Image 1 (cartoon, rainbow, N blue to C red):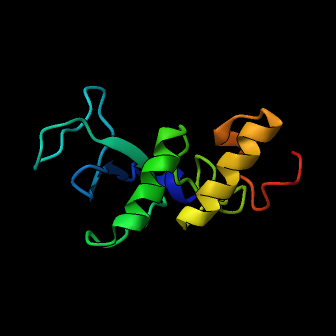
Image 2: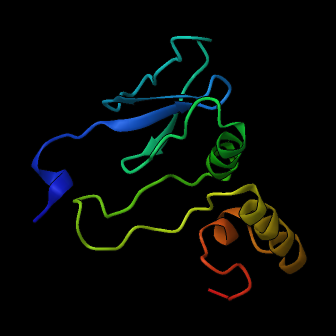
Length: 120
């Protein structure tokens, strides 16, 4: 059953500076944060926003989005693959940054791995 192909689902848009997330339909012009008027970044279909007061978790979200990754769990139609790994703690992000600098791989590639030491 194709979940995302049946109708247009909303995507999660995030402002990491204000620590807010909203579900909006994708538009060509982009969305602005209602609190600070800065452009919001698309976090994907399957993003689960942490609480606003959880600053540590929002720094992890910012690191993942800065690397160019999104929280997409499935294919464009909603089936086809399992959810991808994304780090949840700052220690996981720190370990993957160290591995990325030592091995010379991109940060986005190592942030998407369950174990940062295993090659692709």
